[in-house]
Length: 159
Image 1 (tube, rainbow, N blue to C red):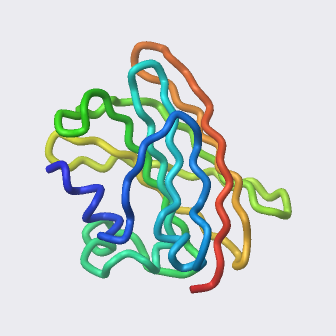
Image 2 (cartoon, helix red, strand yellow; image 1 turned 45 degrees about the horizontal axis):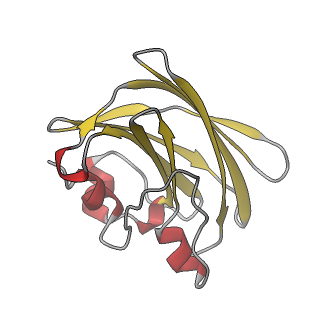
């Protein structure tokens, strides 16, 4: 099922791909919250890290994945893929994720595997005091030993 990521984030979240971490789109803060993805490359592997306030998840999706819906809870979803978009395969990895708030408080994000058919993603949540900006840092090690650190900031506002 290649649509799991789309279902999980809802139709408002569009996936993009670039070599550099992406910035949140300008405009309405609620709209920005819907599209908070960062991308990076490790060799021929594309890493997509998406953050989203869990209140924006549909009830069925949140229930299916055991995620509480709340303005002050942020979901981190990380997917690693190789190949063309229509023929992508998942790439397993070891990922350590942290989020640091504006006060300098560092939060470890415990990631769990999320399987859907042949696809594998990593999912975790973190609490945030709104409004706030979180600096995410992901240390990613592929099975072949390739390693990369991905860093990006995201702003969260009351919905």
